[in-house]
Image 1 (cartoon, one colour):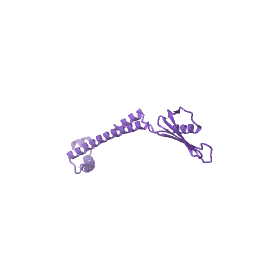
Image 2 (tube, rainbow, N blue to C red; image 1 turned 135 degrees about the horizontal axis):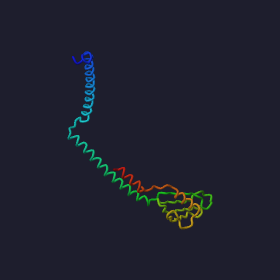
Image 3 (spheres, rainbow, N blue to C red; image 1 turned 30 degrees about the vertical axis):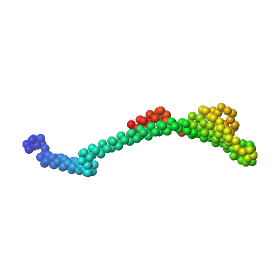
Length: 184
């Protein structure tokens, strides 16, 4: 007390200051206990019905499931690559032109059908219909988008229509690498 008198501080102020400090510490203690209680509830909910061994097993099961999914994705990727390889030889582009071959009254019963692969290989099928003489059908080969025989106007038109159609395409190597990167 002599120290407080020597410095000129009233002891009552010191006691009030210490009481205020204790009050602040008490409030902080209550806040920390509340947060601890909430954290404990979350932990108990997380661990509900589980002990450490079961939780570890659950986590390992999830990792195993991820590994299985990765193997499945790789299998699917190989299957897609195989299908893309087969699509190159499938007819994907179509051109069709209907016309009246002999300028008869019968209407547009004649047609030219062009079927092409992704690489523009295929054939032209020309069916000319006549009401008097029957039906004549001709087939012409197409290699790399070109026919090596003379084409009629309708055949040329159908070939150009087929070549302009968008075909299914294979994955480029950059797209394949991008897909592999996403799997990992």
